[in-house]
Structures are given as C-alpha cells and as structure tokens.
Length: 279
Image 1: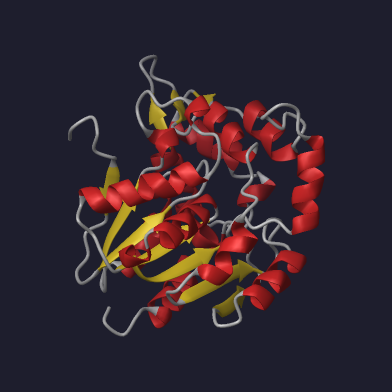
Image 2 (image 1 turned 180 degrees about the horizontal axis):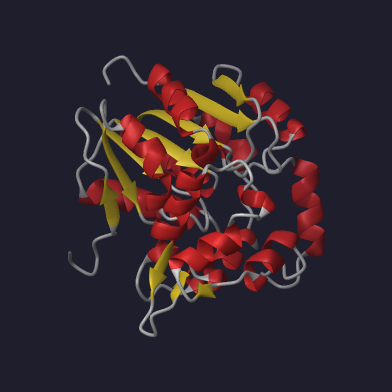
C-alpha cells in the first residue's frame, strides 16, 4: 500500500459494496459480529479513520468535515460509486459530510447513533470552549484519563468487563474490542490502538452544522437510535424527524450508544431490510 493509500479492512462478502464508517475510539475490527452478519449479501469494506493512520497528528483535524473528505478520497481511490453507506457515531457524521459533498458515492445511507447534538447543547458546549479544545468537556476528560495499557489481553478483558459502558456487551463482543481495539507494543504490553489524544481531539470539536445539512441529503436515509442512549438524545431525535421527514427512523429497545456491539444481529437485519432494491 502506498503512503497515500488510506488503510482499510475488507470483511469479504459478496454482492454490492457496503462501506462501514467506525466510531471515535472503536477501530473497524471491533464491529466483527455486525459486519460479518452483513457479508453474505454485501462486500463489506471499512476505512480506518485518520486517528488510526501511522504518524497522523491530532492537530491535523480542525473540524469533523475532514473525516468526510477522507471518506471521499478513500472512495475515489477504489473507484467506488453507488455504495451502501453505513456509519456509527463519528462514522455516521463522516458519511453525512461525504454524502452532501458527493451524493454520487452513495445509493443510501444508514446513520447509527450519530453525534447530532441539539442546538441548545451545542450552544452550551460553545460557551465552555477554551481555545479550540474543550478540556472540561466530560468526554474529553474521560478520553485523556482513560487507562491505555495492560500486561496482557486477559488482564485488559478483566479490567474492562465490569465497566458500565460495556454492560450490554456479550463476552464475545468485548473480546472483539480487546482483540481489535488493542495491540501489543514493543515491550510486550497491550495498548489501545486508538490514541487518547486523537479521541480527545475528536470529542473537543463536536459537529455544529448537521442540522443545516440533513435536509439537503438526496439519497434514502435510515436513522437508528438506542432507546437508552446517552448521545442521540430525545430533543435531537425529534428535531431530526422534523427536518428529514422522508427518512426512516428506528429505535432499538434495551440498547444504548454501543448498539452495534450489543445487538449486532438485530442491527444487521435492520440494515439489510433497508438496503436499496439493487443491492
């Protein structure tokens, strides 16, 4: 792969291309159960966002639009058009930006738990800003203080298993996070593959223009929300339905922001049911 080629994972599969865009701090391999469930009908590709690129610097990101531009570049590198685009959290926003700028790239879009904050929340976040980094924003603090290394994968699993954020994940799903979200460093320890500085940088620059963009999308859109989410809150969900009434909206019971990991089979079926007729 040349230095200019964007790295990605190919989950094989057959049929038309489905591109999956991953969330902040969750590399594509963590979604193994979901993406393998889609592979019987699609060739599933998952670009790695720039925080996972070797040598990438957090300062290269000044807003989330760069993630959409990266996705466009990836599509052009592989001469992809009319792709079924699916994104989770940050990946959903990246897919939105790409779909607005280059609608020819997508036959339909699925936004799973996108980071769409209601206007009053965005105003409050803006009022807290210090320079261009929201050091006091809870998600930023959490990212910067997160434990990043363990003596073994088993130790990492044991440490993470009781965490509330992973409460709805099966052991198999959590092992996917341990196996694909961590790697062994030169000392033999296992460390987070997604740098904390990058995770914090992404969280410090929440997208503010999504409400202006959503009504401009021309392709079919499926919106998916976990009923117990702490991200896509009811005011934002309601506003989205008002701005894009032609979209399809689905909620999953007993699911939160990490529903691709906690409910992979249910989510896969929803994605397959919404697929364009030509897919």
